[in-house]
Image (cartoon, rainbow, N blue to C red; front, side):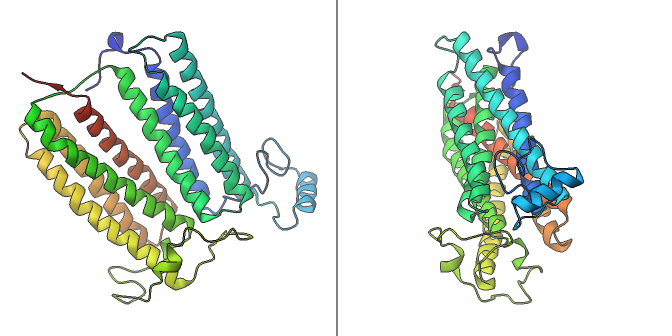
Length: 339
C-alpha cells in the first residue's frame, strides 16, 4: 500500500526514519530494563553529574562519594545513557516534523498530528525522568513503556498519512472487518500493558516452568496486591517489592492474556486469509506469522530461562505486531469504497 515517492507528502522519509529510531529506543529501553540498568544513573538528565558517564578512576571515586547508596557500575551506566540520548534524538526528530509541517502547511498536510506527537514525546521524556527520580515506581515504568509503544504507533500513523496512499475495498467487506480489526488492536494493546506491568514488577520469573507455575496448576495468587495501581511510592523498586503470590498473579494474568491474544488475533487472521481480498489475505499471513513468532518467543523466555536476546526480541516483535494492526486499522478506516 506504499505510494510512489513523487506522490508522497513532505517529510515522509523523516517520519519513516523516526519510526526506525523509535523502534531502536524501544529495544534499548527493553535492554536497559532487562539488565537492571534503569537506575544505572541515579540522577537526571546527566549520569553522576556527567554528560555521558564517569569512566576515569578519580571520576568514579567522586561519583561514589556523591551517591554512596548507588555506587557506579559501568555495565549499567552506559545502557541508561545511550537509551536517554536515543530518546532525546527522537525528540529532535519530532521538532523537525513539526517544522516541516508548518513550512508546508496546507489542508492536506498533517499538522495537528506532528504537533500532538511533539507534546507526547515531551511528556514521555518527563516519564523517563520520573522513572529515575521515583526509583522505578512500577506505575511510572509501565506508563513509560506504554508511552514508548504509543510514540511508535503515532509516528507510524503519521508515516502512513504522509505516504498518501489509500486501500480500496468493497463496502460490505470493509464494514465487516473494521470492528474486528479494532478489537484485535485493543486486545494486543491490553496484552502489551500486561507485559509492561509484569516486567515493571519483576514478575516474569515468578513462574519458571511450563505449563504449570512453580510445579502447580493453580498456585497461590494475590490479585488484589498484584494489581494495586494505587500503591504508595516507596524508597526503591529495583528488583520488585511485591510478595511471591502477587507476582504469580501478575505472571499468570500475562500468560492467560497471551492465550487469549493468540486465539482471538489468530482467529481474526484466519478470517482475513479467508476473505476474497488479496490485500487482506496478505495482512492475515503477515500478522498471523508475527503473532505466532511472538507467542513462541514468550514460551522461549520460560523454556530457556529468560535469555537476554529472546527477551529483547519479545519486546521488538510485540512492537511490530502492534504496527501491523495499526496499519490494518488505518487501511480499513481510510479505505476508498469500490463502486
